[in-house]
Image 1 (tube, rainbow, N blue to C red):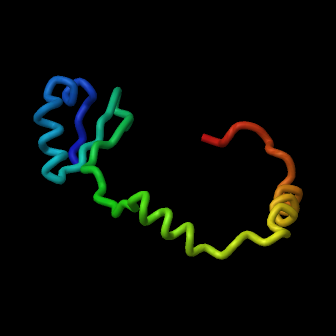
Image 2: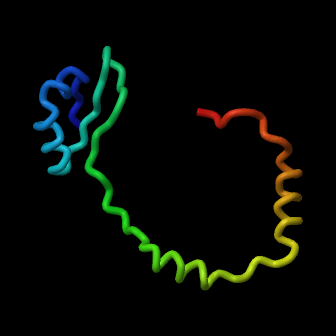
Image 3: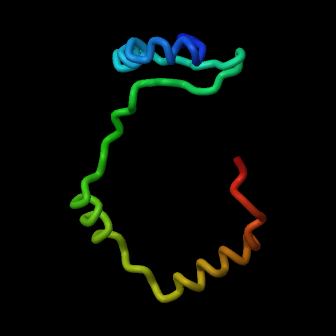
Length: 86
């Protein structure tokens, strides 16, 4: 992985984006510490709205005890302890 400073990336942004578009991964550092990574966008398969609706229609129905199961699960874990850990 190529390692560049934030200043180098800023000065040559178009060239850097072209390299990333060609498949290269780039680590950006500031004062020697990594702050970001640039890599090509992944080509994950997407689900269309129609496919999502079809998938949801094939799920089994929620039974009457579902709310009770959720409450039992919440009680087992206890109350939230604060903000999400970062």
